[in-house]
Length: 348
Image (cartoon, rainbow, N blue to C red; front, top):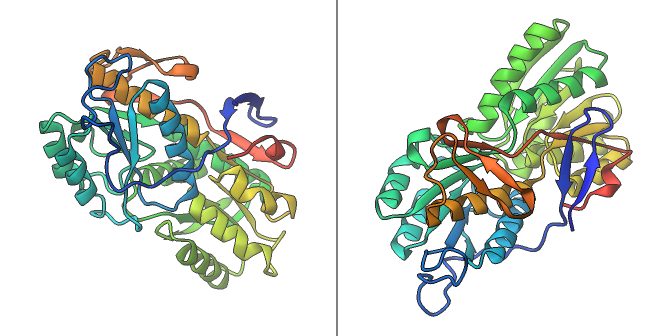
């Protein structure tokens, strides 16, 4: 069950979820009639919802898909998850095309690239498929709604504040990102640069490197940063794969406790590194809630409860009521900080 917790440092409340095991399917689940009649609140609405994360086998997306599956089961729909093994710009196209051919009611997509999948999404939309993006957006004209985990400004600021606190507000830092084309990563990094320049003049951002959301690549990029910049005092990794890989490298190196690491991670990935002192604190929203909200947004679009216009409101189960903002964006909430004092309270 979900329990309310409060950040000791930033005072932001979120809900924590125990992530269920997600079965990666190759197509839409069926119930005898191809999903045309769900038996849920939507009457004859096609409540088959397919989640398409950036890549499969990513713990972050396992958790968000678990939240989506929970929501779909609550409203009597049919859930499926499909996706590539690698997070490249065009790797999601074939999955979008297949889902549209299968006649799903909605696609819930975390985009690897803001433009590369737009043509495929347009075709799916033309076939009657509702398109919801979450976590990482496409161009706004390519989807009906974007479920934003938190404001880009809030995500950027919390990471900058954390690294500044951990390195005494001075010295060299680097960023270990996901892919070079990731919409959300690039927006956060740009705002981190602005925040550093405006509020932390004694911190120098020496380089942004890309681990492509691959564990070994991110591990190797961490090693390369430390060899290239012997005076490096901190690393920010705004990606769950990257921060875990960087922590794994630091935890067995001479840099443990000497080079600070923060960013965005899940408690289950990062617990051992917080407990052994490699990482002091990091941030994230609840990805299970993000998937849960995205699924309910898809249902509201399918049933016609909303159209995606600014000011539309819809109910999202246990999360309550949400309103569509500018550019078809729905905001989940604020990021939460995990540290040694609270990380034991979470399981996702």
